[in-house]
Image (cartoon, rainbow, N blue to C red; front, side, top):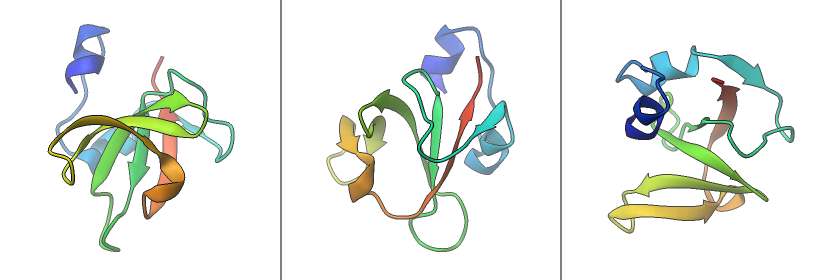
Length: 86
């Protein structure tokens, strides 16, 4: 939310509501700058969101590392989709 706010984009706090913002990006067509990449990690709805960085990677606040990191999307469970806000 902070990155988007700095870009002048206000988002709802709920990740489920964030998924409804912008336009849907088909899987495999994500581009750097697609601001939201969503995951359902536990099978009960969207639980995690990040910013697509390109080359199959995303920037996100990792619970595992307890910091903001760049991760390979293929290692994160439950890809739901991406949206393009700008």
